[in-house]
Length: 271
Ligand SMILES: [Fe+2]
Ligand SMILES: [Fe+2]
Image (cartoon, rainbow, N blue to C red):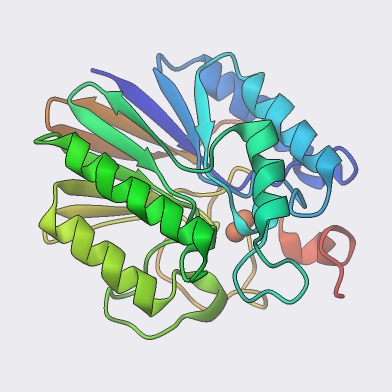
């Protein structure tokens, strides 16, 4: 039974080591699991979108886990569409690829096909989004009868697949519609994301939607609207058995409940 561990939102930086104390317990927890693969669903770094050193440090940490590891980028790693200070662009994506490899990827694990997607280019209306989307069609076609899991930083939606634009918190309605249509007409069984720093799992029409909690910090109500899910740190264990998957949101012993609210002025000062 292949086991995959999903971790997310570690927000690592050697220059701003505010959440660094949570990496060693996470590392120990990963070492203790008999896992085939670790998937990091983004915001590996505090500010890889601008700081080469953060990217190098984040990649060193991830590759030092002693297990095969793959990552997809978050907004703090490569910027985001429409952000006036850190738009996702070729330079930022190149920096990610130099340290972490391709920003979208596939791995076949047991009977399953796992696909990592760069959600930060959804809605870009540019060459990076188009290239990934064409690649995704091929990857889905190549999956044949395999069940498929998608991993991405941002969730496709917060409360409902048909909800309007949620701003910062999820994928925009237009790319969301396209991706959900693709997921529903194919064999996608699991869509797992990060970004919200909350833990959540629901099943809608046979498709599992999972929010992997952060292993870095929590976000207080002053900085995040009220969302479903649980404000707790941790990780996700995915046990693939035949065409089934068992999903466990897991605590990670030794993680400290840092709150971004307490240190936001230092870690992400206002511009
Ligand atoms: Fe994050
Ligand atoms: Fe994020």
